[in-house]
Length: 98
Image (cartoon, rainbow, N blue to C red; front, side, top):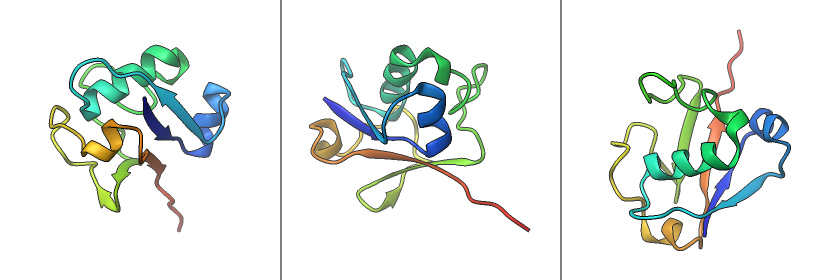
């Protein structure tokens, strides 16, 4: 069971708590996790990544184990503690201001 922590605006949209649990079949990659997240919560399609290109939305970042995974290739395996559900993948919304 994979764990994902969502930012407030996505939690509100999906009507879930801070953290969701997902079943990811096959290799646990960022693409597979996002596919599972969008399958479980269809209202999130297009909010995390562009539906045509599959690219991450510019104001969202992915973090795990204190590392920024935002620019990692989407098909690279995620660290084992994430795949085992011991640690969550964090999706963080950027904070901007001026």
